[in-house]
Length: 533
Image (cartoon, rainbow, N blue to C red; front, side, top):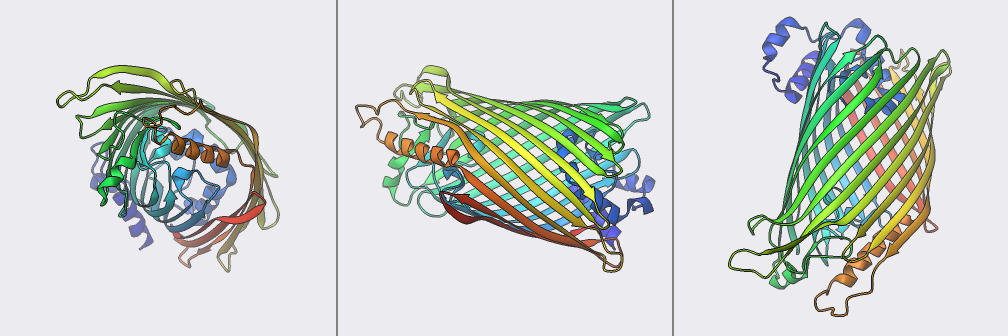
């Protein structure tokens, strides 16, 4: 029964690809778990802390299946609640609750071929959202349609992804992976908002096996589209809508414009990986380099797709990791450096002439931002008789800077966040068939430097009625970002191996406390239940 359920899940997540019929595959390959691929061994392998550390090195489709020697599938339900008043950015809301159903599967068909997939449904509710009415603000920022009221958001998200890889006898490997996410969020009170978006990604790549290392290369493409609609039962509400061009400016020509907006984005990426063939022997090194480009167009949908702004985003990531396996345990170090640069070109239009607006000029790179992040993480594991202990130290440095050429506005801040976590895992008891996992962690964020500058307010406030409002939102967001805070996290979970030993039930609960401004608040609570097989 379990094997039938497992096979059905794989076929559901991964429809026929590369022109191969599953009936033909099933005739040649038996989807069964070998004695060496026991469920207990698979759970243990997938839960090692160092696996999370080296996971970014296995994102090339041709190499993804090599991270784990065992197959594992899961069906999970998850509920989480976050209370972030004074902690989270205004665009995320003061609180957020979320329910998710998540199905994942990694299955090795044989020694040469593997398939994997994921399907998820998420329902969410965010309260007191301010500073944006369009969806996915971290992606489109600083461009958005906003109003002076804000409110709650109901959201739904459907995510599907899957991939396939195959190794050829000539040392070459090939893989392909695709994914699609459909998202919708809405509000049934003024201002009434409906945001719908679709995000399509596809990635393919090859790798070559040298005596000691794999060298992999992949190319990816991305298409993202979002349509934003806003309406009011009170028609006077539309005059309080404006199209944000930055953290202190908006479009004067289209002030009070509550009509449909659209974001159209197209991007590409390239990634290279260097991985060891045998990662569980001696000392091994991992290296990854990624570059992604995304161009996002912000338009007035009902005015012949009139372009208000065009955002160009460049992302560069460099990751180097070291893994050492000894008779006493495993220890690993990883350094991840990420750099993101954004440039915004903004269009200036004249008065309406018939059904069109004459383009007067384009202010190139009027908006510029820089985000730099460096994460240094470690894993030190050692094992007693029946308990595995894992110590996870980390330190993170962040630098953010954004500026506008036309208004002279400047914002900059930097953080340093050291932290440490301790995980313990009790081995599965052969009689009770039960394993217990616990984790506790502490991290503190220091603000190193912060700057927020604005030019004097315009003399004629008739043409800039909302400048004060925008600046007050920017000042409040800046205050949240530079605030020193301490997070205390704890989790407790476990697995119960069913008598058939072909499936395991698991449950986990986690909580996070945040200390800031001389007070402690329960920041996040999460509960998950699932089935592993």
